[in-house]
Length: 456
Image 1 (cartoon, rainbow, N blue to C red):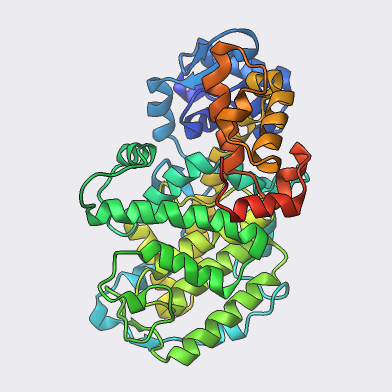
Image 2 (image 1 turned 30 degrees about the vertical axis):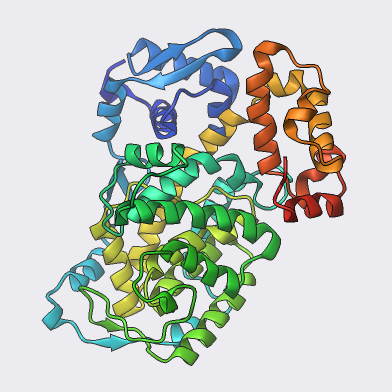
């Protein structure tokens, strides 16, 4: 099969495999593309024959990986989406180009503007819409989980990868010079020796902030204190004045490269942030809510620093509550991101932001739906030791035993001991009130164990 003969079905499947960044099972492709298994199998055979995919393993362990030839071909082909021409590059639509040209004009030719409170006060949840309503519905249908699961389940299932993706991409938009591989290596080593440079601190702060958000939002919801705490996590040890961390801004801020001047009245900043959070909590479509929160926090600039970082992470809060794919901000250029923000700052025009948001969220949906589907296969070790795991959790949480003592009470093959220990520690790390019932643990008792510091 030659590159020009790739059908839309072949190309869609190939893009999913490339986006996953790891070998993919046929079942995960079947779920992501909502296509029958026979059709998936035929497409996979075609792509293997054409040299675009490599088959790994046999039987139920079969996975497929993209070849270098596939990556080269896809990187040079236009996407089915009008907003994404190829990986890593956003192409603005013709309708948006006049706005882009106006935003790229010399600063001296652009009219200075201040904060317009009407941008948020005129917005009526579920009547107004910043995203085109059809697009918001389409993205929600594409990104949501079909399973009836507790809030936050989707993001927890892909959390390990999201921590790397979102921390790196958000930091990169702030000028961070660490690579994606550097970020992965950093997060794999919990202990850091010696003083940390600013780039490392920024990445670690992102990781801590995302972990905080994943824990807090499903139980506390979207609140002003959660947003403020998120900024505090993001800016820890990065600002000279500690009074600027976790508090509403008390001083003037300037936006580089823009004629926009945010409000500098602390009372107004706080009242408007409260209004933004109140409105976002009432928006039924979580994708519209994510977009609303993202642009409004950035436009308001309620903090002395870290506003854009806080807006990017907080955009994930509504998606998390509705078990939608998270928003990682991968594959967007700093110049494109800055242009989208300028459209809001200087003209209250969301056209460029809409196109950028659609571009990055479609890519996030694509990546995390494949990843999540690949993780949905039952773990043979968990299945084998289903009862043993239940007993281990009981011993530690209910009987206040150490995990080492608990392992003495259950039968585990020597060859499986270390692997099961890792699983048990992971389950104890993730134990919460809303999921403790699967181990026959009471909510109150589990919360007391959590409050005691999760002793084990």
